[in-house]
Length: 456
Ligand code: ASP
Ligand code: MG
Image (cartoon, rainbow, N blue to C red; front, side, top):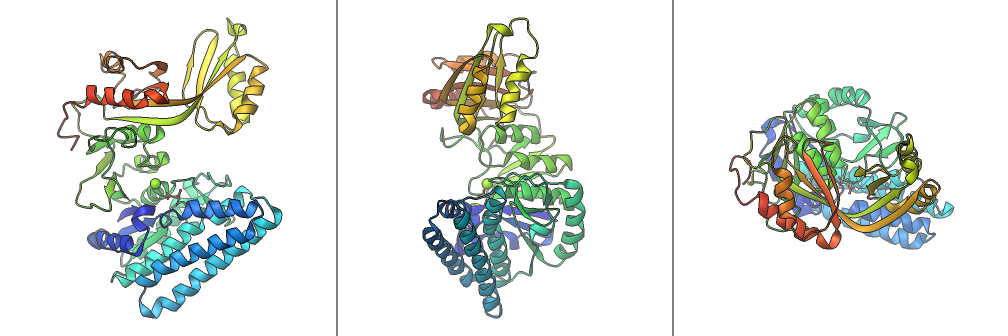
């Protein structure tokens, strides 16, 4: 068995789904289990219409429901065998009826709970997985739909739920392999449910994570993430075009890149796969002939000390300074408690004897945090910063890397540096205005020559 996950753009239209069908057909002997995202931008649109409803604009929200209904049916009706057409139509209708009721409910209370957010946003994958199942049959492949909510079981942290692997894996093992013997199993990514059967979601971009959970649960030989780029690159194409394709990379490196902004892969994806030592491939559904990026436990040794440069923009820095920190203990605990209380993750931290600087990428609770911190220390906040993260399997153990990094950054004002906490990353903070220059300098320094075993 292999798991094949197709993202939103790969299933955005009937044409795109036809491409998916031919990619899957070419791999039928490997018993594919297909995981799909919502079609195109459906998740964004569902969340937007829920917000409209919460603002009391029920009519506008319902107009959006109609548009979504039309969009789905227009694509779906072109890929369904005649005997199944009425059934599929009725099923889509029932889903959109349910959505209309939720809109009414939200509009009535003019508020939306995280539980309701999940109920609404789960519709995208519920619909796409049903449509793709019918499409596969239309394109001549036997296909079976499995509702992910019945097998992927999570905690109750709505919109960001964490799977219970001990409950999920046995359910996957019982449900999937018998079906996969004779049919392509199709499932929605992103969606799951609590022990009590209430819909949850795994966080934005979570379909990759679903694919990895399923792959680990059924002991797949490979997990393929089909997307709209050729694979992981040596630099972020949104910042600097012209990066090279990475052929093979370790789980640790890929995870590090995902945490630090590489959008190709959801950061949690590698964990279940790594745990069960199942290779993860990133592939392009528009150019299936490209070999993509292979993520494995033990990649071949690489002559380049660095595999890639990742970036994260819109970073806020909080600088905390207090002379009371001098020779005192317990100070860091008090600072971090504040971030904890306001449920704000901290990304990068640097300290000296009397000051601590840290970065956050979610400034929602910034004012509250600042007020609290001002009770114990002097606080300065800087916005519009960017983190640059240089990733390679043994940066800490390779002499001379630091010197090369700083040489490449000549003329760039480096605002914070963090190295050593992980052996494979060196990250630093710059002003957003310097980001492109920093990445270009580093890319030029480290990727003039390429190890052909590792880069394409
Ligand atoms: N549809 C979800 C999202 O847009 C999950 C995914 O596509 O991975 O975030
Ligand atoms: Mg994605």
